[in-house]
Length: 272
Image 1: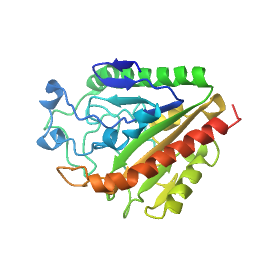
Image 2: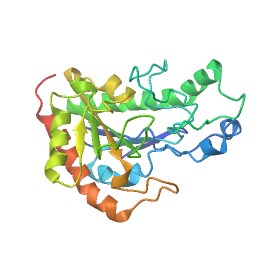
Image 3: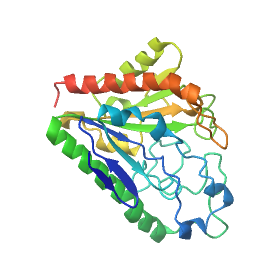
């Protein structure tokens, strides 16, 4: 299928009503930005490592796939353009992060970006990704009537800044049920629990970021699900963040089954 390769993202166009978005996959940092950053920032520790490899089955299924080139430290594609906190009252990183999940500074003294630089990066990196994402969703919806947006994320299982204790393995978010057909998040969590190996929750600590909340419009035929997957299920959670073939091989069939369950539910839904 046709490929759209921009300098800031890549879009593979598929044949079925499924768009896989992996907004935190990128690791590149432009040289002018890197020059203002700390050594910690250049490690891109908070990347959603290896998800393109873990979701390799999506291309075989016929999904459209959109991925960014640049790291979330450049600008976070899963935050609102105005920088609003999606989880009021809870600590989180913003549209243009200034520190890591562990609160280590990303910028050298006196180098934290001002508003003009935030606006420049929003225009240069955030906007192109979202134009392409919105355009592909619209094309798929016009062709198929309905479309599933699967927003793929991963994270360390313990990040005290963001949540207490240990995160469940599978964390589904449907904006509290608003971004997808009713009960879909719970159906997916129950499917994981029946599998027996992994833990799961729906609309817990991670209820869906900006992409899920912005584009999920089930009444218009666009159903959005975010999956925040604990990295321990497929990789090492400490540097150098190695991909673990055995773990990945165990979780991949379940991931493919979950995507298939969600896609079938969307196709069968009669509410538009």
